[in-house]
Amino acid sequence: MAAVEAEKKPAEEEEESEEEDDAEDEPPPDFEVPQNRKGRQSVSAEAYGAWNKKREFVPPVIPKSPEQTERLKGVLVRSFMFAALDEGEFNIIVNAMQEVNVDTSQRIINQKEDGDSLFVIESGSFDCIIKSNEDGTERVVKTCVPGDVFGELALLYNAPRAASVQSREPSVCWQLDRETFNHIVKESAQNKRNRYDAFLSKVPLLSSMDSYERSQLADALRVSTVSDGTVIVTQGEDGDKFYILEEGAATALKDGAPVMEYGVGDYFGELALIKNQARAATVVAKGVSKLLTIDRVTFKRLLNVSDLEQRASSMYT
Ligand code: CMP
Ligand code: CMP
Image (cartoon, rainbow, N blue to C red; front, side, top):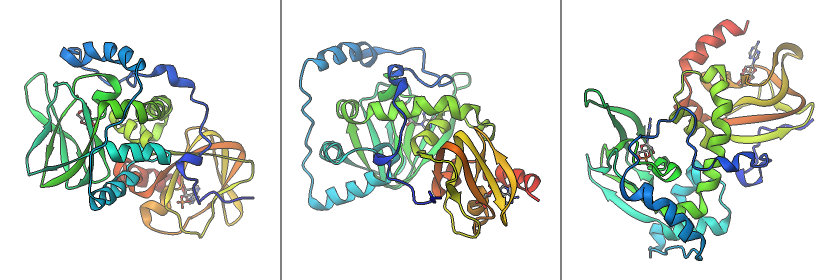
């Protein structure tokens, strides 16, 4: 029996063949692409794509000091969207990115405008703000922190900006142009989001998440396949991961006795993260199973911890 707590690096993960490749440019089912796809970007994107295929992509190289390069690499390795790149791709992204320094309350993205770049945050924070079509009021839908990416939707879906983004404090971020994003990152980011949106939307625990939150969770997921009898978590050990069963089955055992059976869409491993305690049970795979793994930070940011606590108090004796 093999323990799987030590996760594989993303590049080595046993990801499924990318069946949904053709879904490129299709937004997740309930993601609202604004109707007025307007102006230069949506029209020219097609022509641009055709033209682009005909020529060799020459990635931009924006000169940087060694100190800037180090800072940027440190940001990118923390960002899920760039985690699966190989070394060559990673270096192309490092070369292409441009440092952007902003003061407090600066809007660097305006809802409904066309967009040609995305941003990764190094320091500071940004509010994503959506203006209501009905009464014009603005609502903060997400606050982005270091390591987060924003401005990716316009590039993924060739749509106008879905929100405005404004700095909350003096902040540093890195900007990536559409062309480099399209060539190096878009396909894998898109595939992962498309592939997991449908599955995650059916997981009862996640039913209160909106489509955008699910896409963030999809970015952060690690996927691993385990064989029959694999010990996924061990009672009494430390743990910093949360699991959802994508395929297969598993059994939880307490002091060696079975206490719970899991099937597709079920989750486990939440107690150690919620209560900062050792694993309360051992969980063993039944048959070949596929696990979606969520790290502690993402778990706390994206999942409804009080809901999980309530569920736990009625689920376990
Ligand atoms: P984009 O549409 O290119 O520009 C605005 C960005 O706000 C968007 O990409 C996302 O990165 C970010 N954002 C954060 N939360 C949301 C949300 N709930 N809906 C849409 N965009 C969001
Ligand atoms: P955690 O303690 O992090 O790791 C073991 C997991 O087994 C635990 O979270 C729960 O998700 C799950 N589990 C299933 N049944 C029980 C039980 N009776 N008591 C505690 N944990 C259980």
